[in-house]
Image (cartoon, rainbow, N blue to C red):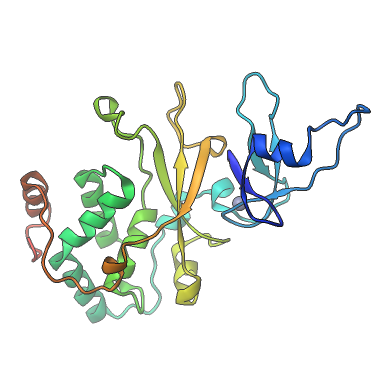
Length: 255
Ligand SMILES: [Zn+2]
């Protein structure tokens, strides 16, 4: 991770800023300097700066070897994707699913805003995944809660070559704190559920998501209007998006 938090002020630190505050790894007498750890801004555990003077590597903050779970370090797509709502109420699940599809344009528009140039193919893929895996059965899930779970189900790669100028980095979404899977997230009180959007650079020939290339992390801020869960007039979407969704989900309303 290219940034971390100052452990007292909680300001965002880059490697350069960390060195400004704590000094270089070796002091004037040639001894290794004691420097306080910074904090990971996802899990709040200690992280240390490494590769700060490497010729070949980008300086980055890394978790200690014995740290507990953190999604940045231990990301396990499998755990996030394992959707198994406990005691699902089939009727409530069906009602939620129908309500979601009836208002799908609102969700697509918000999804696209957060991802920055999202693909309707991705949106459709994660909805199909959610349908197959019973995501709608989480107890107490409201329509405005669905998108947070959907966003964690997939890696969002940088855009293809001809569109790279629009977005040349990728995103992953993590549940904040030491939450390792979706069921744990749903067991948290609502006030403690939050989602982080983590940006990964893809320098040079990089083709995969790598912790060392995490360049920033932000809390996902959903649009306040969206969070009310009251969706009146459907926003316009382009005809390709409309037709594609109608083809993919022919039996669902709102299309
Ligand atoms: Zn962490």
